[in-house]
Structures are given as C-alpha cells and as structure tokens.
Image (spheres, rainbow, N blue to C red):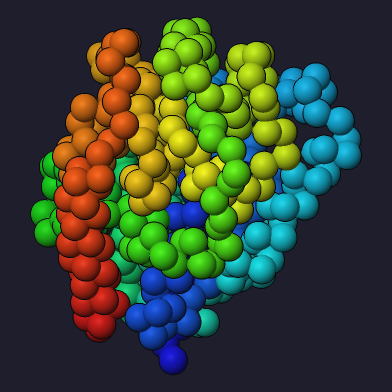
Length: 372
C-alpha cells in the first residue's frame, strides 16, 4: 500500500477537524495509507510565526478571549471534560504521525511517504502564511497534491503572490475550494487549477450519521453557532425564536455566545457539535462548516454575515461560493419577517448537485493520487 501524508489544520476548530477526518477517510477508501502530519509548533515556532503574521493581533485577541471565557464561564472540570472529548476524537478517529514540533523536522517524513497532500480549509490564507502549508519540506522526488485549500480572501497583494509563487510551482496537482481562490492562484502560477468541494462533502450523509453515531433528538430547537460577535445576531435569534416558537441552543465560541441569554452548550466536543447540527430544527450560523453540515443534513438554515463585503479581510466569498454551488443563495439572512423552511423538493435538487460535486471531486483526487 502506498503511504500518503496530509498537512492541514485539524485541531481546536470543529470544522477543521471534520474536514481533516473526511479527507483522510476518502484517501483511505481510495486504497492508500494516510497520516495527518501532527504539527504542534513549539514555543519558538509559535513566537516566530506570531512576529511574522499579518494577523498576529487577531490571533492574540483570540487567545485573550479564550482565556477570558475559561476563567469567567467555565470551571476547571468543564474545561478538562471538553478537552478530553477533543483528545479522544484525535486518538480514535484520526491517524496522526508522531508529534512534530518544528517545520524543519517535517523533512524527515520524506523517507516514510511517497505522496503528500495539503488542504483543505484556509491554509493558504496569506494572513496565516506558513511555508509548510505549501509543502515546502517535501523533496522533488515525492508527489505534491493540493486538495481544496482556500485562500480565504478575494484579493492578493503583489508581495503575497511573490511569497507563494515558488512553492506553488513545485506542486504536481492543484485544486482549490472556491472559484475566487482559483482565480487568485491562476494569477500566481501557470498551472491548471481545479475547483473541488470541501472534504466534508466527500462523505455522503449516511456515512456521517453512521460514523458519528448520530441520532434524532426528542425536542425541537434552533441551533446557533457564531464565530463572530455582531450585536445584530441577537436580534435575529430572538426574531426567529418568536416566529418558530421553539427553544434556542447556543454553541458558544466567544464571550458574545455566552451572553446571548439562551441555553449554552458548554462542553461540546467534535461529535457533539455534529450531533447538535444533525438534531436541529433550524440553524443560524456565520460559519462555513456549520453551513456545510446544515446542507449535508438537510437542515433549514440562515447564514449571517460575519464580515462586511467591502472589508479586505472578508471571508464571505467562501460561503457565497457554497450557496451558489447549491442554489441556496436566498439563505443569506436579510432581516426579514418572512422566515421559511427549505422545502423537500429543494433538498432533492441540492442533494443531486452535491452528489455530482462529490463524484467529480473524488475522481479528481483519485486521478491526482494515481498520476505518478
């Protein structure tokens, strides 16, 4: 069996974990061995990245926010319980390499694996640039494949293009997750770039239900999962609650989530996150992957904009692409009183579109892996 290794984001964030799981499962089902590179940077690597990153203040703010949440809203037992759920998922559901504390040490993997993949998620976002996310450590003799990385923005500065170009030129096959990313990468490198679906769509609904042992709940609820903290979100939640007349559950990711005034789900692990999405009557979110799983599970939803469309740091294009691909453009919340469920006939059309996307993307990945 040919062994492959994947460099991607897989820890801490629910969506990142699930896309890593889905890509690994798909590669294995295609007949290859696979390990996710367990890159856990040491303090010096973290410091170096922090100093170079254009998003360092956003990163610092997030760390401070997490500490604030842990000290104010969670006790030690709850923190440990939640962390244990994540660790159990990594151990039981993901095949990882030994822990690698520096990018330089990744070079030793060249003797163990013949094919290296990177993706998905926003690993090519210039605000979080790392050479290893472009497989810089992989030798020329080993195959390099990009599966569905996202640039995360709709524009690249000239210095960002110059930074990426030498690494992109070394890839054997390149695919990306959005049309906007395709245009940007094609402006940097003279190589074919294919648009493929996010890895979570590579697994059909039935496999997610079976693998994660998902069950329907006895109660109806609106599930809220917000990464942003726009005060307008609360008005939207209250409006939907009053119209549907059902309870609200919140998976909090920040102080804002804890202070919305609804039932908070404090110790949500990766499987819990999927279970809450699967069981929801309706979903309100500003998250790409929560939107993706709402589509997979055929859950009526609305997407709230986390970014202004005019902001240079806007990541809205990711969700716009997903909604355009599925024909669900009307699920962007427009502050309306006409709340609607997504009808069964619409879901049948969506499911057929996503089946085609899954088959096309899986075939691209299969051919890329076989193209020695």
